[in-house]
Every structure is written in C-alpha cells, then in structure tokens.
Length: 213
Image (cartoon, rainbow, N blue to C red; front, side, top):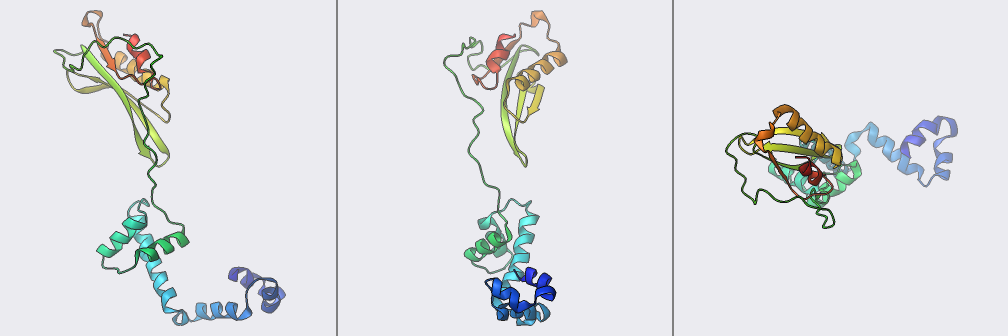
C-alpha cells in the first residue's frame, strides 16, 4: 500500500489516495519519515529487522530445510536471545519454512491374490560362488524434486551390486531393467543354476522378475 502511494502520489496526491484506501495520511507520512531517518523506527521494528537477517542467514546456511524449532535452537547456540514465538512470527512474515516430513512411503505391498514363486532360499543368504544367488529389492530416497526410487540386484557371494536402476516412480519396468542390467553384465551360465530371490512387493514387479530365472 505504501509503495502504491509512492508511485501515484505525484499524479493524484497523497490525501485523495488515502481517502480511497484504508490508510490515514499521517500513517503514510510516518513511514516516509522513518525511511528517511531510520533512527525513528521503533525499537521493536529495528530488532525485528535485525532478527530477520539472522533468521534468513541460519535458514540459508542450513540448505533451507530448518523449521522454526531448529532455527530458534541455532540462534540460541549463537548467543542470540529471542523467543520462539518471535522466530515463528518473523519466519511466517518472510515466507520461510522448513522441510515437512511426509508420510512414510511403502515400497512393499503384498497381494495375496498374486501367485508367489516358491522360496528357494529359506532366509539362508549365503553363496559359495558368484552367480549362485542374487537378491533384489528397491528403496526410495527423498530429493528436492520428490521421492526417487532405486532398484538394485546384489550378488550374495561378493556382496556386490551387479545391477541397478533409478526412477521417479515405483513402476515395474524400472525394476526389471535392473535385473536385465545384471544379466547383461554378469552373463551367468546355464550351469550356474542362478537363483534370484526377492520380496513380495507387487508394485515393484519382483514377483515377475523372479519367474524369469
């Protein structure tokens, strides 16, 4: 509102504009005077201005993920005495907020109606040679753009990842791509009798990939 009056005062005058807008001319002139003479600004406003600079600094130094509590705690560590409610009020004015933890993402959803391959491992995750037992799963990582899903295949003998893929969604194809990569890289022979073990997550497609071996 003050900016609007600044822009239009030379055309319409301050008083006529103030008669239309819900602001008294004295309020506008007070703001103008404080801009010209910062020492006239009330002590609380001066402190708020200083605190806003410190709050923004802490927020940006911590990758813009800190919320009210963590910003307040960090300010206290640095010897800046301020009430938590003040930090909350100023962060709200500045439009600053921390990262909000979302709901837990389920990467395994079993479906009793889907045929399940026989478990050939019985929780014995050991192997005496390469390409005897592969285990697979997928997980997720939180990023600035959202959740990123990672599928991976591990050779139990070497405890080494032999295939992996990344996707922005938990789709079947990217899980199968991880298996295809592992098969291409390792080229297991027919006599290896390779066993591919996975969880029962239907949304990831591991049941399908298990049947391919």
